[in-house]
Image (tube, rainbow over all chains, first blue to last red):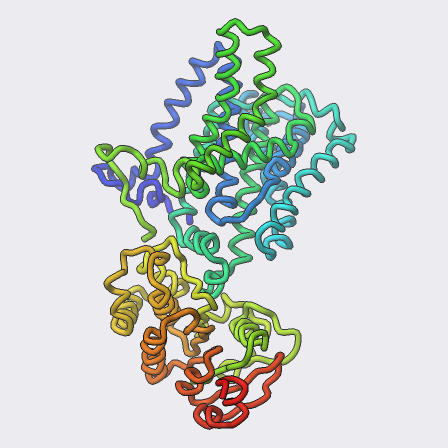
Length: 356
Length: 206
């Protein structure tokens, strides 16, 4: 899958970009932009925080879309995998706090340890995904939803009662290694993986499972195998998102990973359009910034601080109404299964469509 | 061509699903060309020459006819040969060629059944399993499909057919089995079964 220079992002882009450059072009563009953002945002901790949250939510939404959108399996326990990643990465970082790699400058050593912690969290989440997915993905339909829901709650309750994870008080003092650049590096990675899956024969198999599982099986698709693999990849990135999250919020506690968080991610995926990666991104950005926007709007209108804070609490009802309206007017989500460039106005350069 | 007939709930579909590896039989043995395939999964059987066109057609409604067919060749790597086989499929069912860019869900029932058969054939099967190909189709369309099935059969593809329509199935098949609550109660050459008094009474309403 990882042939350099032949990524899905570039396969059918028309234009004069030399093939060798295409695969890494997004990186070449993204790196300076991120570096610039890092410098500009240095002065504003709130903007940095907000951007990081947006990034984490994008990772969660895009990774959940691999399961809920592309494969058509309904998982509603994504926050559970995020929690696994957050706590494992957090504990790893805490225990490695005093360690420094002597051959590296302190800052670089910290970042290396950060990546190690992230990967530890991601791998553990993926492992949980495998363990949860293997039995439940053999079943069809709602069973997976119930199992994943249960898993999310089990993780939360487990953490809440484990001394090593700080019980209900949560885990504090995790070194704040995270940066906007690091978050968006993972955003880039998850989008790349999702797009490559969508364009590969792997993605075609997932698509077939989503469309008609019996027919897919009759075609010779190893349905259970593909579903489990999609689930593991998705869980891995949820764990990474959790790990990133743990390294820029001052404290993580079980309250951050409740069923409400899971639903929030599901809403993002459904709103963006099941199966659309760019849809998930747009919805994640929109739904993350919406409460912030409302808060400052109410603030500007002269509302008292308490009212502005209530906006955060009425977020879920707003999501609910939004979903109902959307399901009535546009049941396939904003973009359906299409990507952003498929729904752009015609005069913009388009990518070729189609499976083949 | 072998037909499996029987009333509702006799176990026809389950038999087929067990043969194609979608169900695991709790007892008994299934062999394909002399090799034991009991308990193998569908994705392991397709490369061994088993193709299953499931009941209710099981096409992918949101993909085009062409894409449906491409999925039929899912496990094959010989691109050039696939093209040729697809053309062969289009000669069998010319209407599919006209509609190759159309979404499969917009085809008529008969066309969807044709698509399901053409798609199953694209995996280059030695054994084609068909579940109720006449389901919900006009008699004329059913006839076209059965004529084509006989053509396919003549090219060396074995066909195992499950049907409610005993008359049609036994007429087309070389050999037939009658299932009743999971057990074979009668077996014989298709035409002979058709003439037996019992069958006429039980399934043909005479």
